[in-house]
Amino acid sequence: MGKKYVLDVLGEVCPVPLFKTKEKVTRELSSGDTLLVETDFPRAVRNIIDWSEKHGHHVKVIEIDEACWQVQVTKK
Amino acid sequence: MNLSTLELFCLVAKVEKFSTAANIMHLTQPAVSAQMQNLESYLNVKLFERTGRGIVLTEAGQIVYKHARKILQQFENMERELDELLSNKETKLVIGATSTVGDFAIPCTIWTFKEKYPKANIKLEILNLQEIVDKLLENKIDIAIIEGSVQHPELITKHVAIDKIILITSPDNAWANQDKISFEKLKEIPLMIPAEGSGVRKIFEEKLKELSMDIRDLNIVSELGSTAALKSLVESGKGISICCNLAVQKELRRNTLRAIELEEFNDLDISFQLIYPKDKYLSPLAHRFIRFLCPDDPAFC
Image (cartoon, rainbow over all chains, first blue to last red; front, side):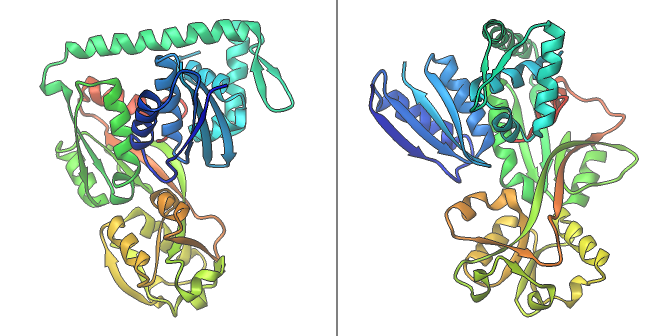
């Protein structure tokens, strides 16, 4: 089991959530670690899924609230 | 069957719930179910298994997912390559937007679009509704995104998304403690409203009229053309204002603004529309942007 990190980007519109996700996953996470990104921006959810899949990271989405999501990115 | 169905299918597969996918895509859950059923009957296989928590892909679903992703990626590659053929003139796209839309939702849409089509050279102009209509007809902007509606014989209108109009206040004001406020009470509070020509204002005024109330009875202290300016005035405690929910998501989450409902109103919906001239040449890029924002089923940033 890898380590868990949290990234709160509530209220940030894209591309900020994706940029911050990219940076954290690329620089701070080791393989197997998971980043929990919390966002309320629908397009950001889609962008983070797309980016993660393109780079082979495992990604899962949980709806925390009606307009608030936790995107879980596990580094390849 | 079309690409946006495949795109939706991939999202559903990823989030494992129809309702979550619906919220992310600004669709209703029945609309998502219907599209997925269409896909199932088109391919004549069962794609999902229902579980207590949502759905999981069947074995057939996993095969479709694997290929759907490749098809979407391949299609994107094709469009990128086609982009290479475009001349500099053809990669230019001037988008007009009203302040409400242009300050918040659209920059993100443009950014995501540019990620897909790096050659696109997009200029965004924030204008009021009348200026937008004029410039569209004069060919000075290619397409525009507005809130509210506009009826013009020479313009095509496409629905993009729906939002709500709310009253906003600073959490420090005395009236911020209630969830609802009556029209009578609102008369006593300094009100700052969007300037004439704003879709938010138009809908607000129309709704008041419907209920035999008049905007002129309210204590209007200023009228501003910029949503950002209205927001900062409200944040500093100068009074109440009206705006789209979408424009203040960050402030509401961070608690620097609070939303209040007007007692007499039920939900006050406002729609966002894409507009462009009817009989005019649209560049391939403009077409693509329209398709990006309004696939068969609309989705908004």
